[in-house]
Amino acid sequence: QTLIVCVFATIFSLAGGMILGTLAGAVGGWVDSLVMRIVDILYGLPSILLVVLLSVAVNSVLDRVQARGGISPQWVQTVRLITLLVAIGGVSWLTMARVIRGQVMSLKNQLFVEAARAMGVSTRGIFLRHLLPNLVGPIVVYATLTVPQAILQESFLSFLGIGVAPPMPSWGNLA
Image 1 (cartoon, helix red, strand yellow):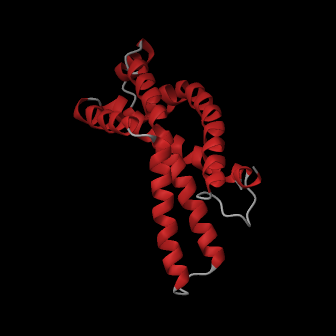
Image 2 (spheres, one colour; image 1 turned 180 degrees about the vertical axis):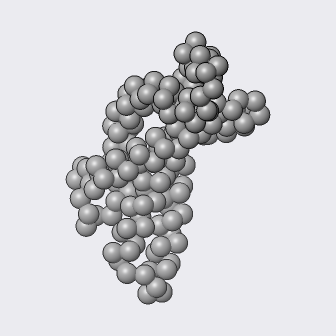
């Protein structure tokens, strides 16, 4: 279960970071300022605390609903797993957004992008043919760094009893 949570949390983190970083870098102006101020605010908060708070809140709601007999134990486990991967992925996209924003801002001023723009290539074409292939390297590097971070966070939360529940295997439960 640890690897499932970590892979999906990494995918969630990559998607959020890529979308917001590309948007901030490509559009610029007030959109860039808004996205980067959100990133700055979230960087100022301890990420593991946000994950713990979200997990505890969802777990208490699930316990109340389960006590009333409104949900089966399998659904409780599934919702806890989804909450965990969304929480871990939701606090891990910040660095990805900054890296992608910087790369997009750097690449959009390169000569090959200006040449494509002068030749009349659409913005979508420039993104797909010129920017996206140049972003693959940083994306792969960041993904390989996010997976161990997610493994540590999930294991820590499971060790505390907040993450994956004991019937399901987890590195934190095994510790």
